[in-house]
Length: 371
Image (cartoon, rainbow, N blue to C red):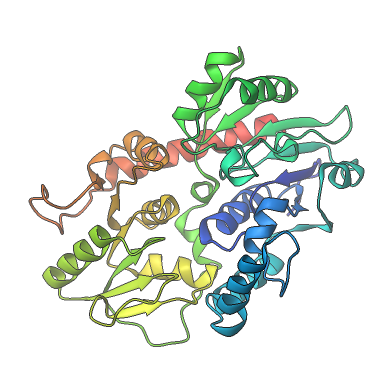
């Protein structure tokens, strides 16, 4: 039910990417604000669009890149089913703006109706994802003068800002009513060049409880093992695979792998390449144990109170490290299993669940107080 004083809210985030974390964090924030008139501005950021669009030919790609793209997506059809399911999820569950926009001017012309603009979560302030420079759309350089601007759980990953980026951020964030980020690492950076309060809040996936996520979870159409250790990783991480197999052997259950790459039959019992977001949620909810090196793999393990291990990633350790440290679960972030006395050791969620609930309430309060 909409609030009687519902605000018109425009959100910019990485909503149209073919990975589970991106679309589920966008959904999480939209659902948390469902009492207002929120919509995700359908900004087709050119660098992300180049990476994720599957046009037969794109002039921005070289002939070699187009040929490789053609073979992968139109002949081998790698990831096509998964991507179609993600597209369907976006259409059904994420409220999008009526139009799609390709640049700042188009976004600006079509954003005069908003009372509030939000820079959302994911690594929208990491230049590595936006062509090597900060994108002004994700810094809310549009809209009318009276609009309130704020950020919610925005991230730059492990990126360290150069002087030019710092000047851009200082000028842009100066117009924000409130600023919140996902990692302490980013807060510490901003605090070195801006005299403005910055809050650290939870990722949007953590704004919703397990019960709320279950309302959109869907079981797979194929038969699944009753008991399984779930692996979710972006790569063929040997630490994840070997640890999961060890845990499964001790617990007497199967190994299920959510992967974008086909695994050899002797590595896991079930390899899933075409899982949709709803099925992704179901798989975490029904797993007996989880092994992951993904941030959102970690958040959904926490949401459903799973026994889990998160494998340390040198490229971007801050987001998982910050989260688990706050919840008193830093021992579940490991580089390898060599020092684990008992790989099946359970987690006592009494204190972590209380801490997560408090962090969720604080984050929701920040969000609504900022509107």
